[in-house]
Length: 450
Image 1: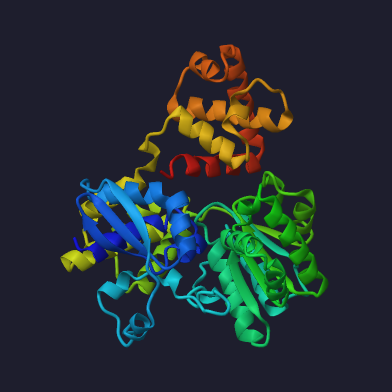
Image 2: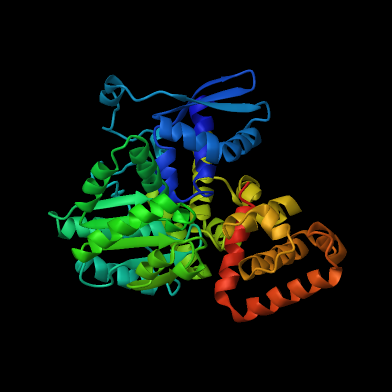
């Protein structure tokens, strides 16, 4: 396997572990430039990408590399900006086999950061997302005058980014004079941190205040970032007062975002809020057929049904499955049969069998609720900590099948009856509270993402 094939295989798996927004932001213009003696060196275009890959995604990248090549022991990152000559030499006149696996998330408009691939025409609508789609369409026809702000939430990989960008592209088509800007929240945070560091925050504010349509993806990542929230609050007010359209997405509702300032939460709840749920079997089949047509491959009915039956909660994972099948087709010059497909996809279709441990569960719960691990493990009775602690106990019991005495011991030597009470309480609430059920699914995604 060449370095390019290896990195394409890595990207194919990474894209269903993180949002499309972050995938397009941090993995564009990256490639393996050296693989020698168990070490892989990946080139990145700038210092921001290097910092994010090292600090946030290195563990995931290394894990996938090791799965593909067991001899790889270490990965490093080297800044290597694209030269003007290299840009001029890029041949876009035809699509080669290698081009088939180039990721379209990277093909963004330089002014708006929108990907022209994401439009309403290829957004599959079902009962799980019809309200969000209808509201988004209304916003695209009357920006700034209806549903402002427009807040979309739902689990990872269910099409929030597609919908947000479809709205942006539709507005850009209908109102060419309006300035549209799409920003993942992590990029917004990086811009604010960089501006503060370089003492030019006023310039950043001026530039952002001139936007007519501001689209912020994954706003849950603003939680806990006080300075970013403060600057965003002022930007929000400035745009809103001028009837500029604000469009936001999150993996949960505003009420469920921890460490989010009340004044921001109030702003988010002041407009239209729509959720995206899980697609049913028929809709998953329709999505797979649509994605297959985009990739110019025709899969047998039994393969489509196998993927749709086993990947139920994440459209991005379905795309990842198709990417892996495409990689097989390119290397073997034929599509796999059902048995080969099962073998190709076993690593992530059989996700319930992934192993974890109690430390990872505690870490995931703490991260989700923006707490420190020691707070969850402490004996404090603060309301904002008791509930996450009970959830952690419930997950230890249900994901690891650990005994109640074991759970009590891990939480500061508590009696096993405390663990029993916590598990019964969460189990009961799950039947009555769909929001809590959604939160647990999001926590499980964090638990099993590495």
